[in-house]
Length: 121
Image (cartoon, rainbow, N blue to C red; front, side, top):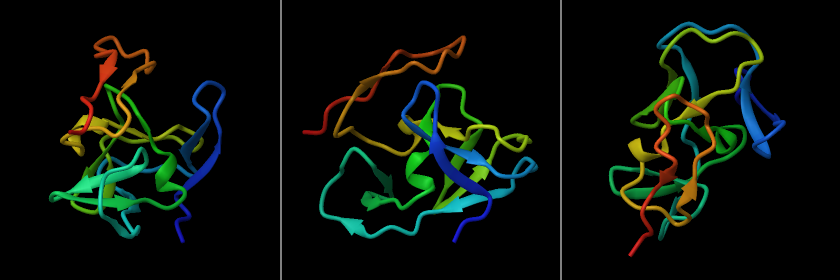
């Protein structure tokens, strides 16, 4: 069970993952505990060429072009200090070699890339 993240409705992104307490840069936010899948899905995370279905709350960590977290192996870690209640995001292009569902980004970052992902072959 993860007591650092919680999934809840987001005002503009469906469901999102939020930190439940203040965390420091580098702190563990979650782990990839899901089952290995035969192919990528909209919600899978690619690690070392394999695709894993993620469970809640990690499943609801949304994309941002200027993220505040990063997957390192099978661990999600904070890139900077986060305040309780802050949404956690990571850059999907850092884990995926192709996308089951490319999408238009709405992160609002100054350097937003807008179109995220190429379709899987």
